[in-house]
Image 1 (cartoon, one colour):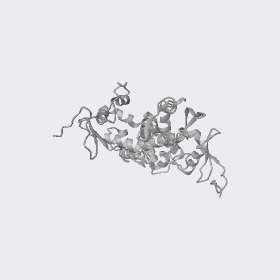
Image 2 (tube, rainbow, N blue to C red):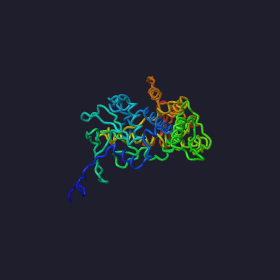
Image 3 (cartoon, one colour):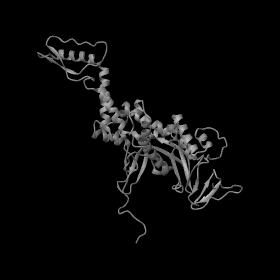
Image 4 (tube, helix red, strand yellow):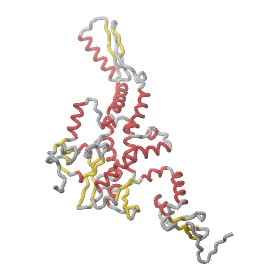
Length: 411
């Protein structure tokens, strides 16, 4: 039997689709399709996107190595410097991650060109998702594609790709595309309020007449009505005998827009799994915990997976990995943070200098672990235990062994 697995059919020809063509199709198929710019005009949506993007941008990325079953942080690696500080491009590390997060949420994904020299990564270059198009095959199993930017073809491994709810590995689905109806309601409510402000709160309606009007009278009436709704100095229309204005719309109060605005804001927060208090103010510790656990963590895992796939060498995969350091999120509450350090120090899994390092303080050279005399230390491998207060060792079912110069009081 032939030892290599082959495709049943020859490789399909790649066809091209672009961002502008996708936008044109959406416009033709759905007149009310929401765009990214329209969605970002909705205050609750923009607040959620900015909150997530700004938080993600401030979280440092660490590189770890698995050595003999233990994790060690890789210091001074060029890739972590590019991600956290200087990308080698016009954007710094914070701006770079913020732009990727915004495109991840509101576009087809976050993309960045990886500028390599051999196996070394020299710089990372953010590319707007609107500049990205694809050449891809129609094969649903063996997916293959090329990335096109202004007519230049690139291979997938040349780009860092952070995609939301992707099904093809080349582009994702934004929050805007998946929830256009909810966002459309909020956007059109905003446009209705804008119209009310521009027209001075004047209602729409029609004019009833007891007799037929001439064309000249109708033309003059239309001009006067247009001036009324332009909110200029002429805000009065005189209706002669036989003319009556009939309202044909409701005010914002009658439509309960203020109540609906609050409801729409809460519904938009649900799209991001974000507690509404995180953008409205008055958030509790539980809200902050839920924000990190249910909103941020899934996005950070997407980032980590993309970094491991695109920035690690094949020889490094399996032993090296990138991880977001979310401990920075706890630095806002100093009292809570110091209580956590106290517990860690008392229980012996953090040393004094390790705590000072986390607080960006110089080490004191205190290389020891604090232990209490009341503790009994047990080694599960040798099945031996040590009692510090007696300075004695022993095993299960054995009498404690005396140290040199020590006696054990058996009374």
